Length: 280
Image 1 (cartoon, rainbow, N blue to C red):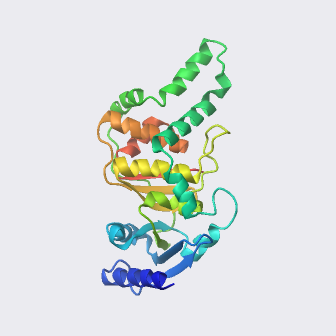
Image 2 (image 1 turned 90 degrees about the vertical axis):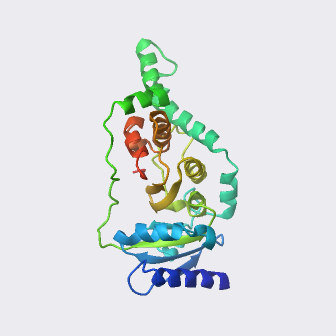
Image 3 (image 1 turned 30 degrees about the vertical axis):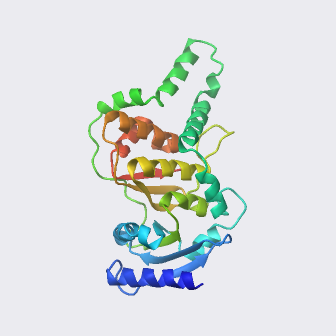
């Protein structure tokens, strides 16, 4: 209890002293069924990125990882109650997720998505079936994708605007963690992906989010910034630059979120400092 009070007091004092939000900061705290403490305060939508960045830069000192969302701590804890894959976050789930090898997880997801796309053509009955399979396989070939990306105009720097009224406040929440990629295992309901379109024997689960986001954090400096049920936003400090590296990231983004359209389209986003995913 004392540690939770200390964390809440720190968040209020520092946020007020550094003018991260106007007026007094009222911190709400709650504890999940598995004992995970979460703290948060309301932030104007136009200010949430600035406040998130300020606290993100200090997470190694505070041990608290910030993230924006529409749910306050009490609502977030209630949202986490249940027995399905998108509730019941815990340190045990996180430990299990961290034992997975990110490259192996990505390979499984890619194989599942490819199987979903080509299952109707397997085994191939004629040349048309074989061509369809080859076209699908090209979507996952970074060299082929890179050739198409090079032919496209350079994308603008802007990212899609987050939905919601400009004056609608958000919550900036904090959990004790090493990095943002741990959050999907601590509060799985933040990123629900029931319509991920892989093959029926391999869904996209909270542990997969941890593996994919950990991989992108290591390689591109991608940090968990905002989540709201079926939407996820990452702040990326080292986006890929070369055509082949952009293509590799784009293929991974498409595997992770087929709603992006295709890897070539995902290549536009891969070059930007903000990556947005949705599963609706």
